[in-house]
Image (cartoon, rainbow, N blue to C red; front, top):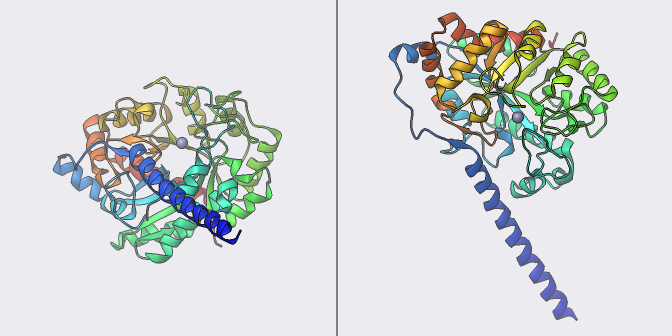
Length: 392
Ligand SMILES: [Zn+2]
């Protein structure tokens, strides 16, 4: 009997090691195959673009980098974002999103919420066991990853939680002290696990922007890719009120048209669309109509134009520049910003180190220097200076 018990334990241990190795390689494979950079190296750009790019304050509204099993402080050759590459690309402010649930077969038309790919990824990434079953714990863990990196490399990454942090970042850059400011956001308020008190918890942990929905309808409201695509629920309305009281931004990326209308019609809510395409360039259920662009702009919000082909066409920098120019025509030049979706299971032509190709494309598209300064980062800077809470 004793021998049998030992044998069972031995088989169990071997099996467990096998599973761990399997998931370790699988998670890395999924990361590399889903986050693709098209350019092998930095394309040639004009001297004018290089010079202008070096003088810009650059900000991006959306990266899913924390989802993947990488140390953000190490430079990688795949995907789009890590601190060395962000610094090389002259990025000053990057929003890092926690992605917490992605159903199998998710798509822009009708996504059913009943399955979840992130459970396997969490295991493969060797995240704490409590993240396997809890969406809130997944958000907390991804937040911890960014905080740990900021504690390790204090001169390269600082977390932005208050207006004063951002003012300090601007002052430091003027003195040529350059680091990346990281601002935390969540893609889908199913992270609350149905409990409004968790907004306080996420705020205390440093989160400053929350997206009501991701690919599927949830307790807050309807997704543009959900089954019902409804508006804001009574529960969602309460949640939006708390966000505005706490000076947290509502990210309406992935929201259904009705949800966008419902949230925008509420008083005192700060809204942004962190990453999107626009229907005027590419007609997709995921993209914003001209009416929605105007609604967001009239509310003082920002529209972050994505870099991935399903949002803006071929994905060439010239296409991104075209989508930005189109959106400026409708929203005005103060309401458009970058919403890359770097590392968001996306194929993007360039990574964050090669961002100057976009400055080059915007010049070629005919944008003025002032417009380029605004969309490349100043709009996002002003938006957060206005909408982040103050320490005072
Ligand atoms: Zn997204």
